[in-house]
Image (cartoon, rainbow, N blue to C red):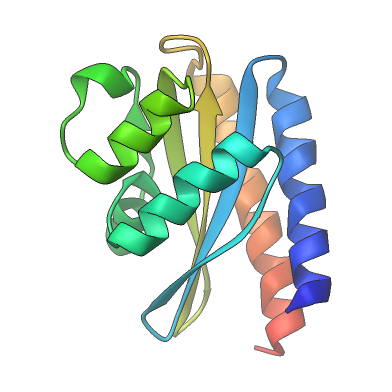
Length: 146
């Protein structure tokens, strides 16, 4: 999936740019039950999602399981996923949001948004990112031949 990785990195970078300064994005994939980190706009976001994949829990994992967005307005105050929380705080992030999309019957994808600021997003950018992750799901669907 090397070609997919560079494409996903580009999508993550574009998402971060759309959301403005102090926002970073990472993308995780669940295929046949296996979690995989697939790309990011930033090394800090990548490390956080890699911890999430290794631990098997975090906002992206939860978003893909329940198929709706997960908002973490204050990472410090949220104790649901300790390994991810510690990695995110160590990276300097204060807020996060995860938005999922279905690729096919055995594949889901989620974008994890990270911010250095506390509770930075209102409804409009989150709705825009929800539409954007649907676009990313279509790219993954095409690449997987689903």
